Image 1: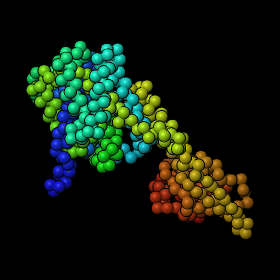
Image 2: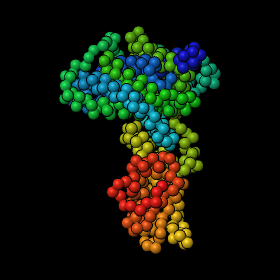
Image 3: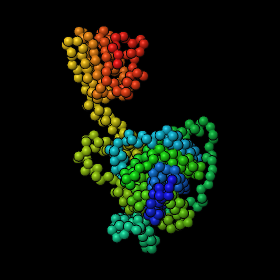
Length: 494
C-alpha cells in the first residue's frame, strides 16, 4: 500500500481529523453512559466498550470515518439478559456476538446490502433522524429557561460559525463555550456528571466468570444472535449512508469482520456489545472527518477525557449536547425525500414511509428495515408479473400450436404460466413452447413447466421446447422431471 493511498484512507487532513474526532469523543460520553443505564449496567461498561470498539474498528472496519461504539439499539437487547443472569453473562454474550459477526463476514453477509432498496435506506435514515430528535426532548422539555436559551445559543453557533470560519468544527466550539458559560455563571442545569459516575480505573483483560457449559451457551446464544443481527444491520446501513454522504465506497464484508473483532475483544475487557452509530458518524463527517484517524482519535481521546479531564467533562451541560444532536437529526433527515414523494413511484414512497413508521413506532431499526425489504420484494415481484405474457398461434397445415412465452417465470407467475395453455384441443398434432423471450428462475417455475409438458403428453400430444437460454436450460436439466426416466413419453426434444 503506497503512502498516498495510506494517507487518503487514514488522514486526508490531519487537523480536521483530530478536531472531528474530538467533537465525537465529547458527544460519546453522555450517550455511552445513557446506554449503560438502559442496559442496566455500570456507566464504565458502556464507556469501555465505546473506547475499544472505536479504536479497533478504526483499523479493522471497512468504512473510514465511521464511528462505532455502545449504542441504544444494542443496549435494549441486553436488558433482560443482565436482569436475569447478571453482567458476566453479558460479557460472554458480547464475545459470542463478535464471533458470530466474524463468521458472517466469512459468509459474505455484507453483500446482502445490495438487496436493500434506496427507498428502505431513505426510510431508515429519516426514521433515525426522528428518533435522534425525539431522544433529546427529555433533556429539553420542562428543564427551565436556561436550558432553552443555551440550546438555542448552541444551535446559533453551530449554524452561524461556518459563515465566519470553518477552521474549527462549530459543534466543538459550541460544547467548549457552553461549558465555560455554565461553569462561570453556575447555571442550575443537568450536566454530564449527573448521568453517572465516570470510571476511575483503566479496563483490564478478564475472562467472563460464567460456567463453560452447554447451559450457558443456551442462555447467551439467542441474545448473541439478536445482537449480531442488529449490530450488522445498523453498521451496514450506516456505512451505506456515509458512502453516499462522502461519495466514496466501503467494504461491507470487512465491516462485518471489523465489528466482530471489536465486540470479541470488548467482551474480554468488561465492555458491552456495540455497533456503528449513525448520529456520531454524521457528526464526524459533518465536522470534516474523512479518514480512519478521526475514528481512532475519537476512541483514544474518549479515554483521555475520562481519566485526565474527568472533572471538566462532568461539567458539560446536556443542553450543549442537545444542540449538537438536534443538528445531527436535522442534517441526517433526507429533506429532499419529502419533495420526492410527489414524483417517485407510489410503491417506492410507500416503502419509504412504511419503513419510517415501523421504526418510529417500534423504536426497532431491524424491524423497520426488515419490513421495508419485504415490502420492496413484494412490490418488485408484483411489478415483474405485469411484464409476463403468453401468446399462441396455430399452424393449420400441420395442426401444431406454438406458444410464445415472454417475461420472467418464478413462484409469482408460475400458475399464470400453467393457466395460459389450452389442454382441450384434441386435434393437435404437436405443441411448441418458445422460450426465446423468457427466463425460468426457481423450482416452482420448473415444476409448472413439467406439469404443462406432462399434461399435453397425457393427451398424446408431443411437446417441443425451443429457445431456452443457458441458465434456464441448466435448471431444466437439473430439476425438471418431464424428460427423466418414469415421466410420460412423447417429447420431441429440446
